[in-house]
Length: 131
Image 1 (cartoon, rainbow, N blue to C red):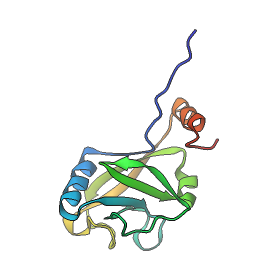
Image 2 (cartoon, one colour; image 1 turned 90 degrees about the horizontal axis):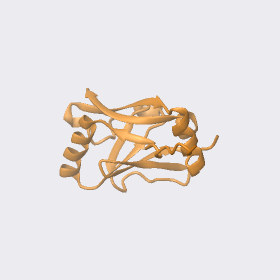
Image 3 (cartoon, rainbow, N blue to C red; image 1 turned 180 degrees about the horizontal axis):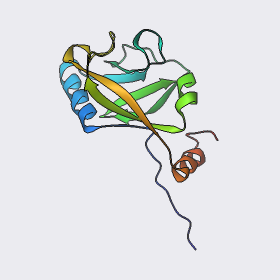
Image 4 (cartoon, rainbow, N blue to C red; image 1 turned 120 degrees about the vertical axis):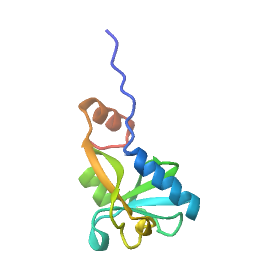
């Protein structure tokens, strides 16, 4: 009997609406980056910045890229959300005051889903997650 192989799931993905807004912002501002806010001024929204405008620290985790844009989260936020895949979406409204989508009338929103057991096991086996 063969072992079931599970592809390593992406830790962050984006909806089609989010990818379209990312492209719009890239066309307007050039290279971008995201950082998942941990609260404070703009709640827990994913914040979009020109690449390099937000200083990534040693305690930030690079979850992956969405639309060719790196996505980071603080280690403390990652510890809280590590069992979920982050799904970046767009909804009507005003974005965070420091996030580039603010003037568009749209804002990025983080949704999530729990990993299935096989996906979680694959992430742990790869070293991308701790059990």
